[in-house]
Length: 320
Ligand code: GTP
Ligand code: MG
Image 1 (cartoon, rainbow, N blue to C red):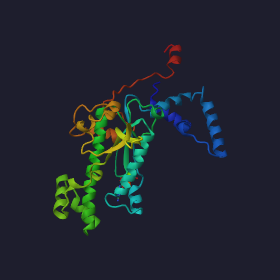
Image 2: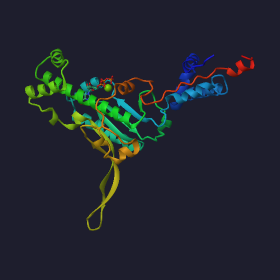
Image 3: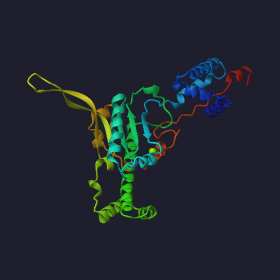
Image 4: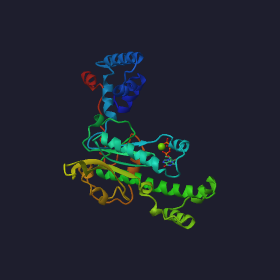
């Protein structure tokens, strides 16, 4: 009579309770029809309360990112390849579009004080919440990456920036070759299995491009966090500027956003997210797996399996 979580989940699916339960946080009332639906929904919940289905309440905890994990929400543009084609973006990087994305992210950072740091490139942005955040009761869908420590966050950021470096270098070579008259399949063949250094050589030899001199925005992505900056708020009667310190969202570019020298110099980052205690070389493959796969326990997380007897009380009273 062992009652595992898997078994409980299956029962709930069979009676459609799980689905009802998960929408409970975001039910909207915007029409008569919707009001009726909401009333039915509430009735279902009332029926479920004190019934044998009351246990589904415990599933609420399943999508909570437990303290002290750090929460990272990554947002990625859907079908952005098509979107960028339709809107005739510059290839491989459209500065105007990237700056627009950065401005939107700065607005998000200004709006939500719990977001301490953001990193983005191409069509994606990662938002890192402060350690103690209670935002949305720390409930999130499985798209959220939860990092068990600052060390794991460091690996996450290094992983995203490596992706930015690798993609941008490949795309730069790719579009230079295509623009020079090669077909897509010829280009893919040329670039197949090439290493970083070979791509740099190709750009330099064929097109006279020193990759390192391309804009940081393209090569490194953009970091966003709040910094104390001095701002002129007004001018006094003599016309002298009156300055105040204000925490303002600023963009910073860095070759290595997961490096100690970058991170530990910013009080707003290490105070709310923790220090990076050492520099990382190769990113732990286990960490990357945990970032990619959903519903997995993260490295550095203790795994405790509790087995609890089901209806044990009735078993005891029958003298078992
Ligand atoms: P899904 O995320 O799975 O929906 O696919 P996606 O089409 O959004 O592609 P993905 O997120 O894997 O990669 C982002 C894509 O956006 C790139 O492959 C490019 O095609 C496009 N993109 C992003 N930024 C730029 C840009 O500045 N210029 C151009 N031309 N394309 C861009
Ligand atoms: Mg995308």
